[in-house]
Length: 202
Ligand SMILES: [Zn+2]
Image 1: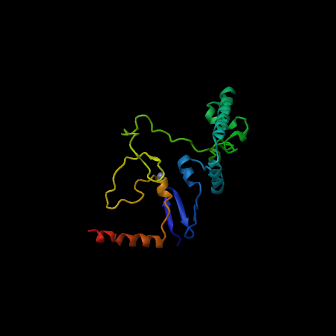
Image 2: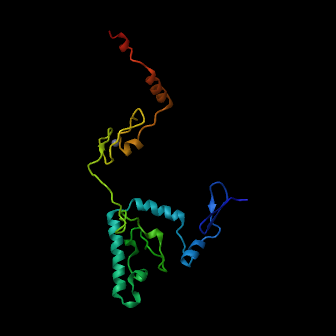
Image 3: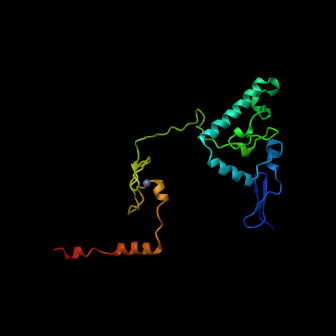
């Protein structure tokens, strides 16, 4: 018996340890949107993600201009193309101007995930939903390794001996070289050593 997992209306069957298949593709879209929306092929989506990493300002500007040109075309071509945002896929234009070289919609006007570039900023919360944040831009400290400013409220280490990286920035912490077993052993041994000079002092 294959293991079975039900997430909302998706049914996934575990065929092997790592392979999951959806035996009823499109059931979610049919229930939620009333139609089967073809989703992008995962491999194609991966290629899109790689392209995303190399998008520049110019790509975004060109993408947005193409989008606006087509909306403009809809507005100017009369009521059959209004509201423009629902008919924009019918407007002519050069698909190469879009960030990924394909329009962000399919022929029928449905969303094409392969043609939509990532948003470039995090959307602010809606008016009235902001959290009152007590933000002090002066709070922080310099990383003891690379001297970068770390905008985090400084607080002393409270559980005994301060770790070496306590006052480091996140980048330095992440790139901290791992000790080999031998180095760890030497470090442990060095803790038990006593400075013999204290015995010779008068
Ligand atoms: Zn640092």
